[in-house]
Image (cartoon, one colour):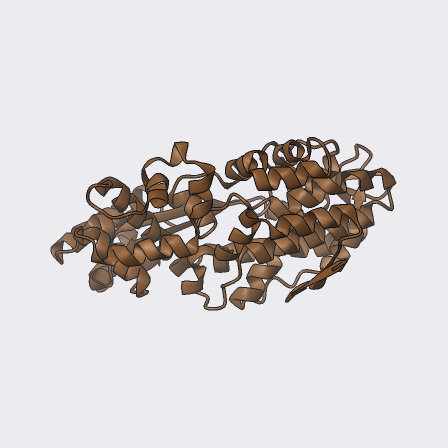
Amino acid sequence: MPTRTYYDPLHKSITLNSSIPEERMVMELIDSSPFQRLRRIKQLGPAYLTFHGAESSRFTHSLGVFHLARRAISHLSDFNSGLKKHKFILYGAALLHDLGHGPLSHTSEEIFKIDHEKWTAKLINYNREITKILNKYGKGNAKAISDLIELREAPKKLITSLISSQLDCDRLDYLMRDSYTTGARYGQLDIDRIISAMTIAPDGDLAIHPKGIMAVEHYLVIRNLMYRSVYNHRLNEVCNWLLEQIIKTARKLGPKKIWADKNMSEWLWNHEEMSLESFLSNDDIVTGYHIHQWQDSISDNLSKLCRQFVHRNLLKALNISSFSLEVRLEALAKARILSEKYCLEPDISCGLREQIVKSYHPYKYGLRLWDGDKLQALEKVSPLVDRLIEPNQSSWLIYPKEIESELKKEIKKLKMKHN
């Protein structure tokens, strides 16, 4: 079959043509076992327990990133036709950038303490199936793609920026896709305008033509809203905290006290020396099965945590972001004391989930405007973007529902004490 079409809810038809070598490479990569595994890893981790439509996979997202990278390089090649020779590297990196995600995507980085970019680089360099496909289409392709993903190194700055920057194809796709699947209405990006406004700065890196400034401002505001409304949603934070306690408790119990298959045993107790085979063997299905089995663990703490997660019997959470660190810690201490009063184990029922999010980093691969005459930092031109530099702190106090009324009274006293 010379062509293949994937029908995507956002991008409509994503068609690949096997008569084009770089697209034939993409087709072979998609059919590989490591890439097919991404079908079994949810894009938004446990967010489906909060947003029931959040069931899309890393497979779907990765196809979308490739599609946007292909559109972007096609447009930018009108300014510099020499970019076309880098399509193999760009397409490979766009498609494979999430290959090293563990179960439940970013959640696994917290709970299993792995770095998905390092694992992506390992798989690209050492998985025979992936390496063979990449290097068949160009000697050294595998190393070049892994360096681009892990180290942000590429022959052209612009290629790097399309994969990893503040306006990369990854962010563009996930903001639209996560908004769509969660039912949030924030992620309505003007993607056509953003891509048409992409241009090449005098130093060869990515820049934005001033005609696209409002579309980019809109994109950055959307990113801020998505973090506040979806990624750092109260119940999402509770689910991630629960999963973290489950894995922490399982690790502490050790292999003699709980059941785990051979590969999960490596994830739990030997993750720093884990084999590629064991890494690839784990996905949402495998981790979910273990959590389901641990409901019957001899450990009361582990079985309770697992039952809470499986049956969505979630803990409560209170936003205490406006409090100082001292007061937040006092609030946690109050929650622990009250939990003990109700004969509840505070270690598995009380916690703090804290995040600091910057919607825009002016010095971390910041965006620039180029009109063919003048190159300017985006935040110098846009007061809106300049305000987005201010970091957002979110802090959620997690506690059992049994103590809610008493805890809120204690929190009120804390507020009065420190005002």
